[in-house]
Amino acid sequence: MTVGESLNVLLVEDDLGDAKALIRAMRRAQIAERTVHAKDGLEALSLMRDASALCLERYVILLDLNMPRMNGIEFLRALRQDAALRRAVVFVLTTSDDAGDVSAAHDMNVAGYFLKGRVGRNFEALVDTLSRYWELTELPNMHAGDRSRLQ
Image (cartoon, rainbow, N blue to C red):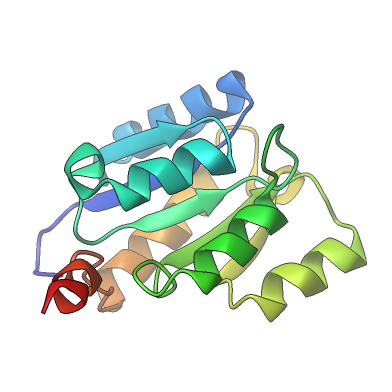
């Protein structure tokens, strides 16, 4: 990441209201360059595997757990088993405070586990945290894995 570069997000969230609120919060804070929204884990994996569709080299994933077709834990398992995608930085954003979900997510190396009830109705606390993380962290180039597979 370079100084002044804006945050890029892959938002994996089936609740359209939460997705819109989070996108608004990031725009209001002027930190989100680009947000790509996937409605479940299957759609997110498809986007990530098609680099031309995602059009992002460095990004963080905000992942809900309770989704249809492929839930967040299933998505994390598939992601971590994919050599080209396993380096992705994932933050869980969910309503689930189930100890099993928390443990399973951390076992799959999430960068953070946020409860929607704690980040506030307008997601300001989460947006502030992501902004600082983005400013201070060197994120992996997700397309670098694609190139190494081709060589």
